[in-house]
Length: 403
Image (cartoon, rainbow, N blue to C red; front, top):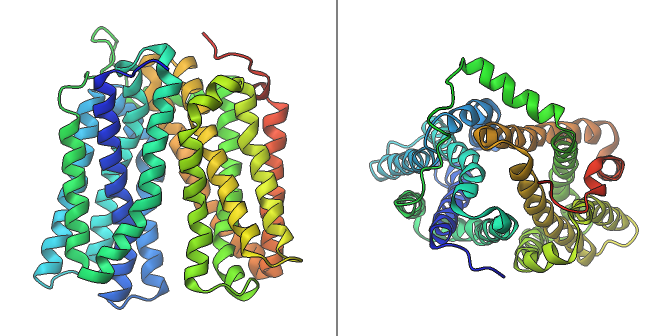
């Protein structure tokens, strides 16, 4: 394994701090809304909208910005924006001025910073590591994300439960500042200075057109969209299903859901071995087929209501998602011109996050008509569809990464 450059280690450290800040903020905000502000489910729903809407509204426009300016500077500005929002929450909570609407507004602004950072990161990596080390570097970034996803929500919950809102958001703000500071001295990652500057909407259409015309990218976007619809159908129905049918307590539900993070961490630790042992096409098949097996394991709990089967479902989905993300990010970096990486990465972000509310809405509709069992069936059907799409696409036939 080739040692990665020192600049990449700084970038990975920045990602760890950034992802941890994001996860603490995502976990702390609804807890503060319920415990400190007395919010009901409508209020927590408002917060969820505020924390996800920037990905839908701003991912693609910010992708255009990332292809026009310093990607490192855009990431740093995103983290400073998020830190400022968290500091404002701390001050409002300290002086007793925090309410649900202000919490939602500041959460929205913090997520805008998160979108800027996440869109620019895949576009900066090729400026930091050599082409032959992209898969290794993407695997390291995914390991960092997995660790933050596993530990961040628990840490945010503990801080809010033990000490209140201020310390949780203060820690998140400090982590965002660390993330911005760690970027100092990294390559700028800006597009070539002689690249012609064109109309904003033209560049937007150019990036979307390239992603939709390129066969490999088009298959990746479609698969990712359907996978996320399926996963959010499953996630939406799981908590009431686990309590009513599996007989799990709140702790039991949390433990089974945590298996997702455990699968991510284990898969991220083994990603270098996976990349060497499996062809790109095989890596593309692992996650979609593993998701089908996971969904069938959850469906089997209708007859064998075991928390072990439920935990295995989330573990398999988490493990497969890392393999998919590393392989598809590396492929996207290989086939996309450097000057368009920000836009194409942002379209991938839009496809991923934009599908999630669709999955939640599908679960609500199917659940209303047929109940929890029908939702599990819908999730299995969607997971089977995304696996069939991959198997029929050129992704599954890739023997090497394109030149």
